[in-house]
Length: 561
Ligand code: ADP
Ligand code: MG
View 1 (cartoon, helix red, strand yellow):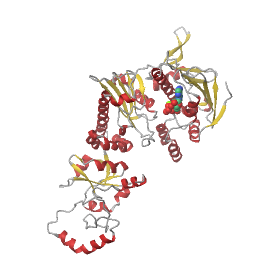
View 2: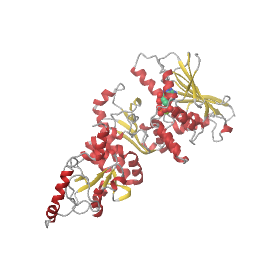
View 3: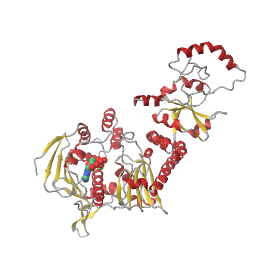
View 4: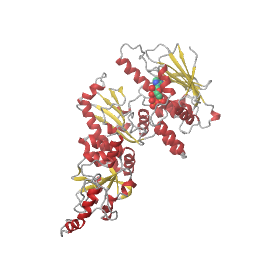
């Protein structure tokens, strides 16, 4: 092998590692779930790659994960014969935490003093490979990428640097060896060289992994005779293919963590099986916390596509629309070809029908949550409402349904959001519009002069403060026959009709002032008119019904329009 080169961890990685080394996260067993999860992904990938590239020199004769414990040297090795990593990949993937949101995570961790909150933050982020450093004071990784001839060894104590060297001989795949921390140093640690301990953890977290996880297990018979043999310690049953009644909550939870790379429990589980013309099974999850990168371009990992139990792709965009990108899970289709590509998927009618049904199912699940568990629904909407509302812009078929499950801040209640149905129930006699105002924050719009007259008359106004609100409200005309009307635009008639001609009287009275103001302000406004919408403020600026709202205007300006 060549000389080992020493590198420094990227600054953010180093900070995360420090967190691990000093073990802020209390459930240390999860390191094994992370390693097994990576090994399983690597086996999925090698199968896929050998399928796509028949000339690739790979061994796919017995894909498996092997766990080896060495009591004497206090090491634990998780070995797979999957895709492996090239030297460059080791450097990129293991030496750098490329995950978006790392900076925010670290910032938030710095600000929080509360241990439980810190754990939730870390859980939401997921630590993956670095979780090893919770239980090990040194980690070695030996890997060879399928199809390449030389391997790579990576070694680190997690303290700021790592070494990399090229090695001539290495089996295909990856072996991660943990040099376990001394027990007396960490009294909370279990003995991870004990096969009973490991078997227990695997059963708990990784039982559904679809590849065999093997380990040497000790058996003592009635005569006190001890035998050791290598056994498969997981059941390998695809969770989504099992009947719902037979799957325990905990199994769903652990499966969710495997596919989502989230450490928190899911908020909602959706398990469905379609039979008939198109046959498929779906196991979808709504997370409990929105990921850091939900609104960045590189947000990935929605739904995985399987065909007849064979993993085909991550992040299958054709199965769910973008506004439901936070939904995680697996869809297993019976009648697609294993060769299916993204291009084919876009055209495929089966996929389109599946997508239709899955969208309806997710939306109806939220609706059920709304009626059965309002608190959980409120949590959902806080985390994902902003994304869901994007659907109002481009999923016209489901517009009603999305409006049905949406909720908004309103002048009616300072704490709780209101649904549109609730708003309509409270509407005054004769009111035929849903009044709203858009703006940057609740406090800003609440103090806006536009709201005064509405407040005085006890009329409710929705306070739409998400940037996306400004956009959908322009394109969605109505809900349940009630049109959306901005109180900052056009003429909003609050007063009863002008029966006694008072208005025209007043109009005459102020004619001179109005025309003087119109001339003075000609550069800035289209028209100056008398208004009944103000009660204490002397004047306010309103938009034309066709104008952009202020947020949109700001957005366009920022983009240089
Ligand atoms: P994540 O799994 O969320 O991507 P990890 O920290 O667990 O994050 O792993 C980082 C990356 O390192 C993986 O995405 C994968 O590309 C690579 N990797 C980790 N373990 C293995 C393995 N056993 N075989 C091949 N690649 C691996
Ligand atoms: Mg991982």
